[in-house]
Length: 110
Length: 110
Image (cartoon, rainbow over the protein chains, first blue to last red):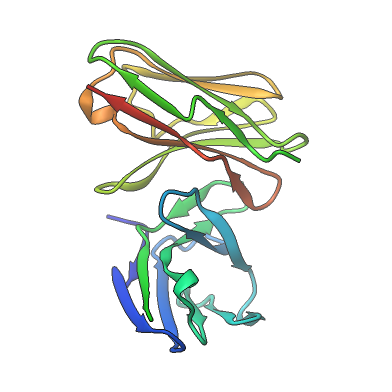
């Protein structure tokens, strides 16, 4: 069973809309969550990380973390066509190794 | 900073042949990870090194896959007797904190 579950598998959002992606870990030993973005034909690039309960905002991107439920969510406001990509969530123990989810494919429709 | 370098970018082998993939991590990064990615399986962890020492190879198919890190400037992933199911993009990442991915090697086994 996948230890990091992402939902939805795919998401279509109109340009300018809000995209909300979810990620939950079933491994209670994780300490950190990472969000990576992978454009088609490219390698994953780190988007945001969160280690503490609460919210973190960077530009149009906001990440929430609830450590009690080991749930994190990524919200993209004013979505742009360039945001279309595979979004990967990863959970980490403090030993560097990441446990990866299977990703959410986001499509922004102009 | 050239980022993580992977060579070759593309490799085509015949069934049963050997393939060696190279990775040059970012200078100063203490951890190196190998993954493979397919549409069906997503991103799969293979193995990782920290300070050149092998830490976890739990994702490696044991019989035909091997990885080494002879010095801090490069790591290799060797696949013996390649099979069509080994066809994938093989990604190397290096890390001090977040993981930085290389461009990947697309392996095609005919």
